[in-house]
Image (cartoon, rainbow, N blue to C red; front, top):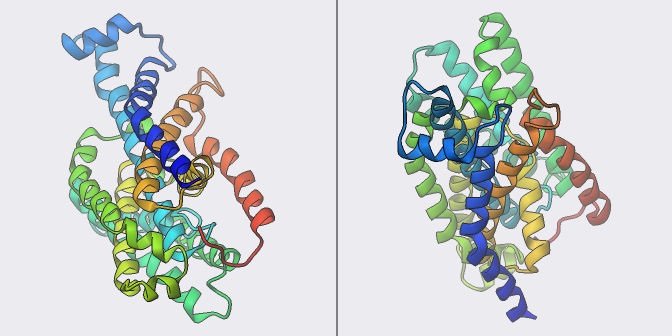
Length: 338
């Protein structure tokens, strides 16, 4: 049985380059404007600045496809780490209010430092992500029963809703609602290629940290007493996992804004498909699946209300809300191994 699990995970990783390439190609080819394959190749190999189609390919569709792939991977890995570390099947950056914290920090940055650089935006997003995690987990430890999946999700929703409401009030008062709408409505067609490039070093650190603690998180997902009995320094593992989540979620929000439910849905799908419990394999599989999933959701969003685009958050919410209700119904309110 274990061999079969390993084999499925291995096949996912072997097929990953083909799946990633196919999703990226679809994202670049399909859109409200019909652009042929030949034109796409010309835009890549013989770019003509005076050609509108070439401009669309180079400056809109390619950054959009790459950004969606990266953000999907980052959020999926963040969700997998949170679920493994807390043994909470409802844990994810969006459900526990982490993305709201990042967006709130960006709102404050735009008020207090309106001329902040892209790196400043990323830094604020990371600070907001860290602060919201600290608040949610602090409240969970302080309140009776706060660590149960449903109660922690409720706390995360309350904190996230509060931060979102304050952000809206601040934006209205200082008349920057239009400026922050990108981060609250996740407009992937407005991704900044420069911001994506700046985020790459952070992504390398976040993903590298996730893989470094993959084995300890596997033991932690079996129970804290089990992990401690096997010699794991559980406090250090949790801190490293949260650091990885902060980095990956923070740069995701900085790049693309708030996108819900990717970190909730994808890790569960990967676990169900592979029947694997080893995070050394689950994390890379979740990264691939998350990137492909969000990219295909973005393609779908372009055609649900054609020729107008549906916000990507609507698509992920339509898939995510029923999924979270299914998890609550099937798993109940207690804590479970991931």
